[in-house]
Image (cartoon, rainbow, N blue to C red; front, side, top):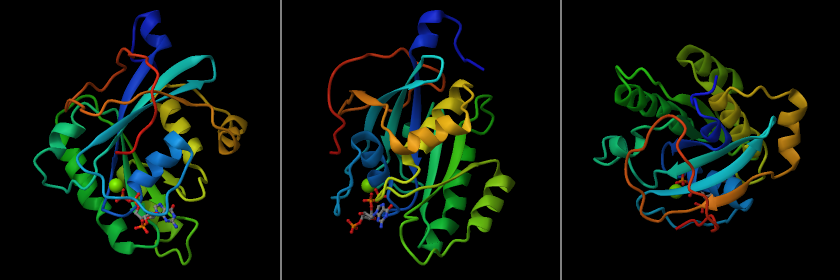
Length: 227
Ligand code: G3D
Ligand code: MG
């Protein structure tokens, strides 16, 4: 269901999406893959919080801008994290499928998110994202991932920021779920092989907060930069 009443807003929905998880699970790589369709072998640690706006067009000419936030090196309990997560519409809880500890720690990240949204009538859409599926051996079994997702009402995803496998499809599905647009299997599969999105804005100094629902989009040119 659409969150917005006016036709204008329906045309330009914007959602804040936060990518969370332990260090080195691939948060920056995932965002970089989605925004720039690239993968760097080595990243300097993200300083502070970056966000990137990515515009996609869902079936039915529904224009959506995902404002994707990278929490950088922030840890649970960090003073700013609560401010950054405020008002987000979706959370990606990322872990590394070759690192069982990072999966175990998802529980702490989820607890943090639930706590932040306690008593909030607008709960965020939360995905469980197993990254690095290009690597073997996989230390976290898909059954475990799926069971955890079911038990905690998360949407399960497996991706590789390195190969790009399922990255576009994941973000498109999240955007569709946020807007209530139904995607066919063919449309989801189509996302695997094409990049339909374009970057519309990047701001270097984000203001903590924001609102859950669609926000008016300030369209501008600009690149998706990893700072
Ligand atoms: P973070 O932002 O969560 O801290 P990064 O994680 O994106 O900085 O990634 C941490 C390391 O994991 C990086 O390697 C990066 O190249 C690697 N990585 C990220 N995603 C994938 C993936 O899908 N597959 C594989 N094989 N590696 C991945 P370095 O060597 O720079 O530490
Ligand atoms: Mg990072």
